[in-house]
Length: 384
Image (cartoon, rainbow, N blue to C red; front, side, top):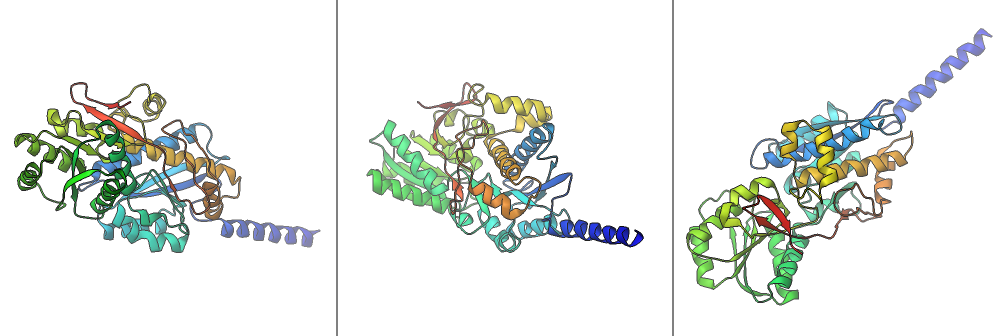
């Protein structure tokens, strides 16, 4: 009898150890750790924090409902200061110290590429709500994105504005880096496929603050509509300089400008600026009502005011994770979660258009539409 009990104890110990060794990092009986690398400081500091808010919001809602098959979601995000070398260090800390299972953001374009070898080696699932570089989403990588590339976004932006104003003389003014180049490529595609009248293309340096010479050249070209490809503060400076020099044109930009601070940054000069996005206006109490209600319920008051379209997308990313993890049952592995994300079809988190992926389809590109800045009303208004 004693021998039987001893053998049973050994078998139980082996089974327990086998189960522990079989589990992927970041998964215990009580929690699953979802990490992230995002800028909290530097030029994109606001972006990183608002993404983290969305991940927290999604986790809070999931945890309030009992978690996923008894496991709660724990969110840990490391600051990379928007520096690629720091991104790699932040990722290594998430792996070595925090034992993360998956990631809910990987910072910017070059930052994500710097981390990619580690992500691929460890087969760490990623759902990125700040879609930037198309190269992130190669079919064989465990990296998924909610949204579209800058290149496709710029094309859709110009296509939409051209339907409203078909006889404009267009110019492109974009940042000379990995964020501006694909926007210019989207502009080139629109010019070619939509037969737009393009009179000038220019690039500016990432840290440039004086745009007087660029505006002088734009005035001389006879331009009537400008495609902008910079950060909100830079686009705002360009708009103000144009108005200062008496250049009255239409301005068009991407979703990076769809954050409440942009309204005041651009000021009265930015009134009427067109913006393309695939999530509803954060200032629209009806279209964004469900999301705003969740933010009020689960986020501190100060953070509610900081929420923006990136918060929405990070929330959707966490809900996609929740759906994929739940489908794995008790045996949660990275391979299982990646496979279930691939099976995601028309999944709705109640914010924006439904999300779909597929085998080899790593980028969900929901249909978007035009918004317009209403400076007097301090809001982004949908353009019908």
